[in-house]
Length: 315
Image 1: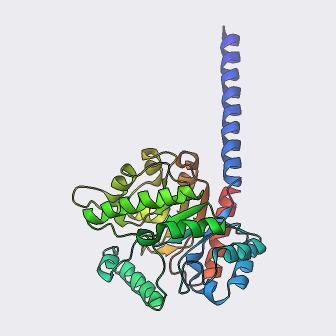
Image 2 (image 1 turned 90 degrees about the vertical axis):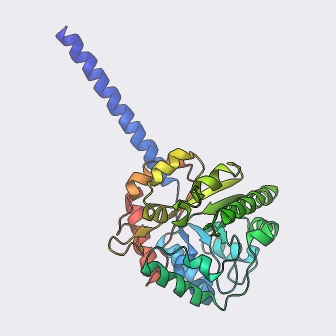
Image 3 (image 1 turned 45 degrees about the vertical axis):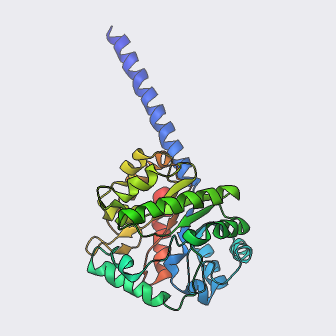
């Protein structure tokens, strides 16, 4: 009997070891199959001053996937979508996603997004930088044009970078805009998604915008690009958000927060628990993730450090 128990326990232990190795290998392969990407907003005005040189430097760091953002020269840095796609491809990378505006903001709406004095200063700095920016197309007024531009560039995702959600009427407008944008994107083979800030987790007239938006939009046509830092700053566990809407987060913004100021920092230097989040990536449905650091003081150096941290963590 003792021998039988020994054999049984030994068999169970060996089986458990095999399962653990299998699970670890599967997670490792899953991580390895998702290259480290970058949200170009992190670079400030480098993409308008020297786009080709900047792209080459990013490729040399090791970045493979890119997400574009609005700039002083418009949504695509002054280029047509096909031209930008070709430039990125020539540098050895892939343009996966583009950020565009959801609806025009006024200053009062923008400042409502600030939670701290540091947030206010960062927003004011952004507005100063963008004051001479030409009027860009937005999803409220130009959803089909933007969807067509995304298709022209051969990108997979068109993402609403932000939209007012400080009143219930604004939240309902966001839902209307997103449903129309989702339909427009579907027509041309592009996936629409929405990028969050902290304000989506503030209760507004009895509703949390994050929940209201996801509940009242089509789960296949309107996906989420979860900003891990802004969710964390809003005291949300990203993994719990994955569980609320499994498979609905094909894109992430991988951003960290300084433990003292809670402002954006190099990935791996702050408070965001990336290991916990990446260990649950499969439940989220993540396809691509993009490093982002708003207001990066030394952009190329900062994104190099963030890349190295993620490469080592995931490798």
